[in-house]
Image (cartoon, rainbow, N blue to C red):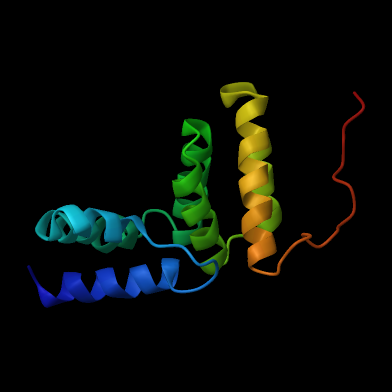
Length: 140
């Protein structure tokens, strides 16, 4: 295991999970069961996958949030919504991503994701999301 991948893993983990809501990352659960496997998971996910530059970190987090919301994985979604905000994802775009779930995951998934998102925003002191003009709706 190279020092470079360890440094990338630590840097990315701090960027994603180093501030915001109080929540233990899954790494601590993994580590309680198997320290070596936890390190392997962390190096792969946070060090390798999350350090690729095909997607920006913001795009990667928005994709993660969309997938976790569709899977209805509330604790992971809570963690990744916080991480998305930590890396500068636009709060209005995150809400829009959750609304986009409607035709694919159904309204219960939309409602659950928005509830989790609002809870995270409140805990961070960032609720309500700043108001903006209504989006343009075509009347054709």
